[in-house]
Image (tube, rainbow, N blue to C red):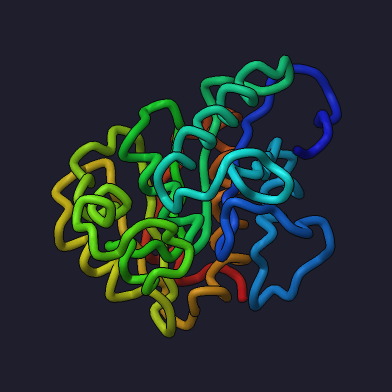
Amino acid sequence: MTPHPAGGGRHPAIIWISGGDSNSIGNFWDKADPENDQTAAAFRDAGIVTLYPSLRGGNDNPGYREGFYGEVDDILAAADYLAAQEYVDPQRIYLGGHSTGGTLVLLTAEMSKRFRGIFAFGPVAEASDYGGQFFYADLNDATEVKLRSPIHWLGSVTSPTFVFEGADQGNGDSLDALSAESSNPQLHFYKVPGRTHFSILAPVTAVIARKIIGDAAGKGTVSFSQAELNMAPR
């Protein structure tokens, strides 16, 4: 977790779930290539308290990887921890993630209303789309697959949830499928032209960070237009 911000008062916070082996955390502290910046540095650079949780079975943690299932409980436990910090505003805790992390945070959005906003980059609609990688369950068991697949539970989302993907390369078919399936006004879907599954991260997380700071300053809740995402600095 990032250090206590300078100054008093309570600050907005975000939990960030990485892609790939989203149960583990790696090096988020060194500067990354802006074409593939998975560190979510824009949030901590903006003064937002940022927590990178290591989930069950990841790193040296006890337990075992369940792949898009029990990990939801770990994220909610991380939110409880954040809310208990005297310098965190418990009403302004956000959640974000990329790729497998994006799938996991979308599932979390379907299970909990505690987050002020949720940002899912490049999730899949069906967990089986990973071809068994990162799944840790029986791909032939339809119930196991369904329980791990966000597309079946979109109606359960009760917090503002924003799903992003690069239009040039990524899980665009999944974004289209999720958008077509959803009639939930809390869900918002955006494809950003000229961006890939990875190059979308740096510019759009910077836009999100500004919105979170603006929300904390009383300038309105977080929302986006397609135009402002299209024009995010390259």
